[in-house]
Image (cartoon, rainbow over all chains, first blue to last red; front, top):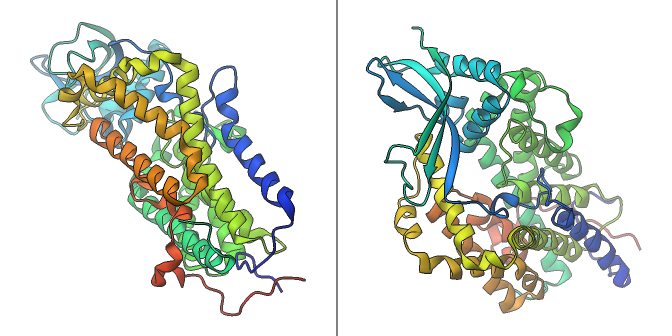
Length: 155
Length: 283
C-alpha cells in the first residue's frame, strides 16, 4: 500500500504531467500582481509594501506617554499593542485613529492599562508629521503634532 | 545543483520536509508569546485575511491558543516524518491557520508566506493517493519560490514604473520604516541613517532588487544559475535586515531555497522521515 509522502520512482507521464500542476501553481502565486490594484493577502500576496510611491514627509499615528511635566516618553510596541511587532502597533494605532474619537479614546485606555512606568501619568494618541529622510532616528521635534485624544494612567 | 536522479530527489524531498517543518516549529516556539498574546486583543481589532475572512470576529481565545500549540506538536511529527500521510497535511493546515491568524490583527506579515505555501505543497504530496515523482514536487517548491519573488518585482514595476530605478522610492521606504520604528520606541537599523544620506547608493540597490526578483526564474535552470540566484537572493535579504532591521528568517536561514540544495548529501538530515519499508510504486 502506498504510504503518503514516501514517493518512489514514477516515470514522468509526458510534458502535461509536469507542466500542468506547475503552471497552475505559478498562476496562483502570480495572480495578485496582475490585478488592477496589486493585491495583498495571506499566503498569496503581491508584496506591495514597496510598490507604492511615497514622499519623504510622513504621517505616523502613534501613542506616547506624558509625565507630570508634560515631557514625552516613547512607549514601545508592547505597551501600545500588547505585542512586540512595530508594524502591528502602528497599524492598530492608525486604524483606531481613522475610526474616530470614540475608537481612539478606547484604544488610549487600553494602552493606559498596560503602562507600568510610574513616571507616566497620561497617554496621548497623536499623529506625528516627520521628514523621514532628514530625521531617520526621530531625534528632532516633529514638523507637526496632531493630538487625537488623551487619557489618564490610573495606578 | 543539477536535476537530481529519482532516488536523490526522494531523499532530498524528505530532507526538505524535515527542514521546512523543523523551521516552522522554531518559528512557532520563538513567536509563541506573541501568538498566544494576540487572543487578548480587543475583538474590534480583528481584521481577518485569507482563509479567516469567513469569520466575523476572532475565534475564541482557547481555540486559537489550542491551534497554536497543536501546530507545534504536528510540526515536530511532520519534521520527523512520523505518520506523514496524516501529520504533514494536518501540520500544513494548522500552520496556515496560525500564520493567517497572526496576520489578522491589522498587520499583514509577509515573512511566512513562502513557509506556508511550501507546507501546503508538501501536504499535497503526502496526501496523494498515487506516488508522485519527487522531482515534480521539488520543482513545484521551486516554482512557488520563484513566483513569489517575481510577483514582488512585478508589483514594484507596476506601482512605480521606471521611477523605481531612480532609487528614491526605495530610499524613502527605508527611511520611513526606520523613523516609524523610532517613533514606536523600537530598535531601528544602525546603518539606515548613514545609508539614506548616500543618494548614489539607491539607484543600484533598486536595480539589484528588481534583478533578484524578476530574474528569479533563472533558478529553474539549476546549476550555476540557481547557485548565483540563491546567493543574490540571500544577499538581498541580508540587505533588508541591515537597512530595515526586518528579518525574513525562512530565507536568511536558507530553508526557503532547500529544494534547490543538495540536502540528500547531508546524511543525518536525509535519513529523517525515511520510511521503514520501501514504498512500492503501482505499475
